[in-house]
Image (cartoon, rainbow, N blue to C red; front, top):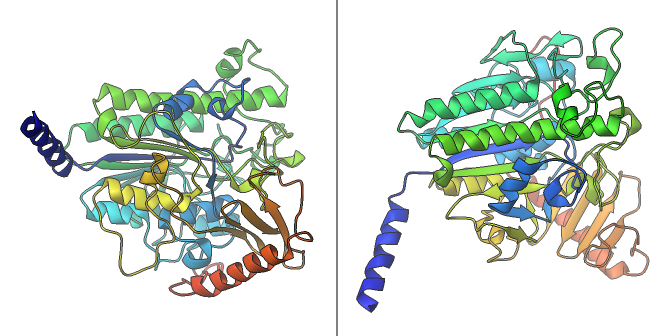
Length: 457
């Protein structure tokens, strides 16, 4: 019996070692609040397919982004390096989105590592990190790109600040349809194509949903509102022309959920479920300003929203499904960040981490399974001079350079309603010093930010 068990163990190990590298699908949603999904406690919303990913994998409760704005979040995700290190430290404006370098060319992003390992690579959705020559997706490691250069495009007209913004490769591409569906359908078509070949594949699916569409992207005379096909309102029993903005927002999320479901179904149809790592993450918390969607979204139970440094802005939904590698139904309470996505993907591809640059992310696999604590002694989130640092239960926050530091005990007060700075000055002093040391350390191997000069890039 012992000999049989040993043979089985050897066979299993051999199977793991000889297994084909995993396919990878990284879905990055745009401004979903912590309290916006069924699997995070929202009982009024219909997100069964996103909830399915949580049920079949790991749902993170303490997952952070290191900056609370779209551009900076994406640069950090794709490099595995903090914005202070990768040089993309601010939100790109319209001209910079269209013609700027954005993320410095010295930086390497995830598809470049995976392509060198034999992966097919594709991006379908929102880019938002620079579109100058040399900065476009197909020049930074992606074999294929279909999506928008910029940010919160019109979901149907696909315009951004008055300019049509859908591209195929590096050229404008006229297409009709709801952007959420277009990006998901392109992903499904690509999965079917890749299933016929021998290569593993990586798909980056950065939805522009559920970002609110600002008035600058509306057609003349068009009222700003959450944009969604009427059929998703009708799923709730509401009229297709429903005017209530919170109901419209719920429908936008259900439309996104439907798109996620089609991607999952396509993996199943092609027999790829078991060898595919699927991730669903929000790029930051919901923006709760009246000008950004009538306060329809929710970061419950946390304080405030993007772009602040409170929990509602930087603690986000994050789900990971990887059959055989991540246990089903896990609730991971480890402190993790989107910087950890790149190391996890390198693990899935059996790629050694680079030696020529510092990665701030750490492989989170053991922590996702609940088998290890956070791989980070502390984490830092930053946008301009607004800063947050979390070390275990303790968190310091400064909302601007001139503002006083605040101290919170997230274990007893996750909603950050009791500032302990005056009561625990030694803890505050220690954490402020830790941040100062981090600021010095992060300058090692840092890329200087690119300055946009019109007509020069």
